[in-house]
Amino acid sequence: MITMEEKIRIRPLTLADIDTVAILKKDVMRIPGMDAANGKALYKWMLESNPCRKDNYPIGFVLESDTGIEGAVALMPALCNIGAQHYYACFEVDLMVSERLRFHGLKLVARVWHSDIFPIAFSTTPNETSFNIEKRLGAQAVPFSSSKYVLWIDPIKVGIKKYGSKTAGIIFGVLCACFSAAVRIFSMMPKLSSEKISVEKIDRFDPGFDTFCEKASLDYSVIITRNSRYLNWRYVDFPYGRRTIVKALDGGGNLRGYMVLQDEKARSGIRVSNILEVFTRRADRPAMRALINAAIDHAKKNQIERLEHIPVGYHVESILSAMGFIKRRLPLPSCLYKMGSAVSAKDTIDMSSWFISAGEGDTSLYSAFLPV
Image 1 (cartoon, one colour):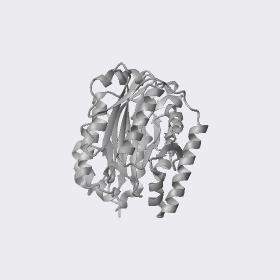
Image 2 (cartoon, rainbow, N blue to C red; image 1 turned 135 degrees about the horizontal axis):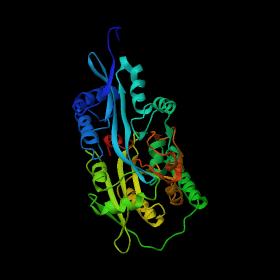
Image 3 (cartoon, rainbow, N blue to C red; image 1 turned 90 degrees about the vertical axis):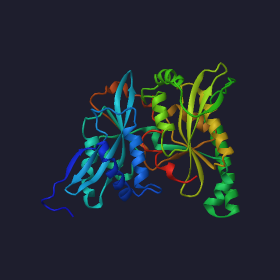
Image 4 (cartoon, rainbow, N blue to C red; image 1 turned 90 degrees about the horizontal axis):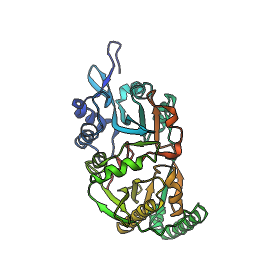
């Protein structure tokens, strides 16, 4: 309970606060498999090791009482290409407030969304409360983040797990197979290409990805800046990830794109592989198709029962449908954004050419703690 004399302050989060915030996170958020030690390791990766961090922008804010830190919001740094310009960006992560000060949480959110500190701010995986608050503070939903695409690799086995009987599993499997076939037939089937695209597994992103990402990013009006340093930090050096990374090459050995997968087990017990990111030139359908086919092969070889993808942009949706993925509406959009006054509105109007992946923000961070 707050006394009349007690002062509640908000100040920028510093790297020296990481230990305390990790303990607060364990006590407040209660994420399965997350304790203070791995919470600290995650913050050190997210904030201290982040190659996009700049000292003149805050990495978060803390809510402090006379007894210490009782609330926090972390802001994962990023760089963003918007039109022809480069801007600093952040992803809101881990809004948490102690029970006794929970009504002060709005002050933390307002520091991010009701200010003009950041040229562009994002929020991923909002719950209903944070979604409504952030919308009132000017945040907007990224439209293609309102759905995900699902492909059942072994629908009969999944049906048995879901419904507890072999008969129900067979019925579920047949219905899934029929529905996927119907989706393929009635979707806008892209013209099949005879071009040969090979896919290879990689352990790290080499400097060859720098030139490719720079050129491919020009196809998108809004995209987080990509290069080998950022991609290795984001997908390879993540301390708790189970990521599989592949690259696509044409017959001449030229890089045509990459894909990142994360395997996990859903709380229902179903083995899931999430396509965190498929990155190619925007019109390179042969490379997109080859990479998604590689995800399907990975799922079959590793006893994965469901393959999922929250689209990175509208350009990939028709290919997913043509390959039998079923579109599902999410209860809430998985990504919100707000542009600051430093960003020119004319560069951000065309939502069809945005690229925001499930690998960014905190969409994939905590599912990595679920057992496979």
